[in-house]
Length: 116
Ligand SMILES: [Zn+2]
Image (cartoon, rainbow, N blue to C red):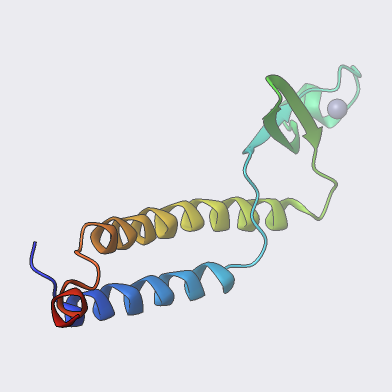
């Protein structure tokens, strides 16, 4: 590949733009978020008559072990948003890596070396 300063500048500008996008995302949750419906087991409860309880759990692997927590009532939307942000983050980092690979494949300072 011939050295092309403009192509490198474009790639670096795109990389900076992507990096700025990651900063704008907000909090990131690298975990599974699952809504559950369940019956509590009390015979007279509404859930025994076709109206199940609902909750949300968050699972992740920590040093090979599964960690599972129940999301507190009212925090469900936060959990979903943070998980969505994590997915966006991964997509952005993928594109960022594309640009970095592009830059790393470009010759460095070929013209300057010739001038010396
Ligand atoms: Zn119940």
